[in-house]
Length: 265
Image 1 (spheres, rainbow, N blue to C red):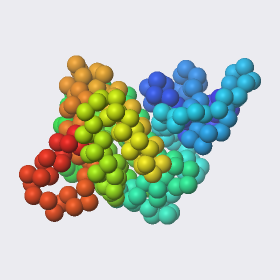
Image 2 (cartoon, rainbow, N blue to C red; image 1 turned 90 degrees about the vertical axis):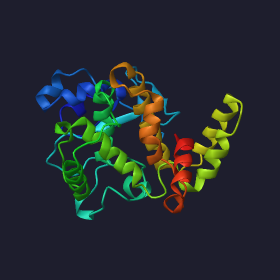
Image 3 (cartoon, rainbow, N blue to C red; image 1 turned 180 degrees about the horizontal axis):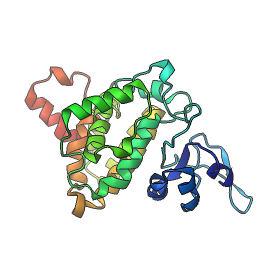
Image 4 (cartoon, helix red, strand yellow; image 1 turned 120 degrees about the vertical axis):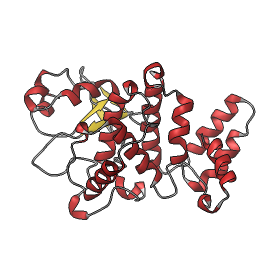
């Protein structure tokens, strides 16, 4: 970590350390911040602990990275602007690559919303300026560096929902729609939870990685519902339909679409 603190690089941190990193505006500031806790990698590699022992990863790390300014090449998970890959409307497997690393802009959105979302009333519910939304999406699609920390929190939440809505077949996979619905039909709560976990295990790995980060964010916001006015039910209504729908959703009558949205929520 001493090596990391002396160079411009993308720093991986656990949720509890996000605020410290976001507040670090320069390398000098970084020296004043509390030590970062290295998160376990997604590939299951061993990591050395302070006492010299090694620990092997057992679960997918619930960590985010927030991009730091750097004059060198792209940080892990950042889209290569030379490749001209749009951020919106692409399969997650294309955006994440072989190492299943979420695109850096998505990591940044999650990190900032994790820090500011719980204290923002109506997060994910209130609309944002339409012109600002389109401009931010265009800037992110170009692959350039965007100072997301300077943007409205509601704007960032709307753009994250746009990203989820534009994932081909959605985050929870339209192919698994019937299985998700069948899992909900279980009368026993424990059976329902077990069935939902089994369906989730069938998701492509990039989808599962993003899903775990997203649910961590939403749960964190719901725990502060007295300020955000967004409990789990409200969050499900605002975010859920962007995560799952059948392939023929647009061709269905409005009444049927509403029924589907209610089940998804």
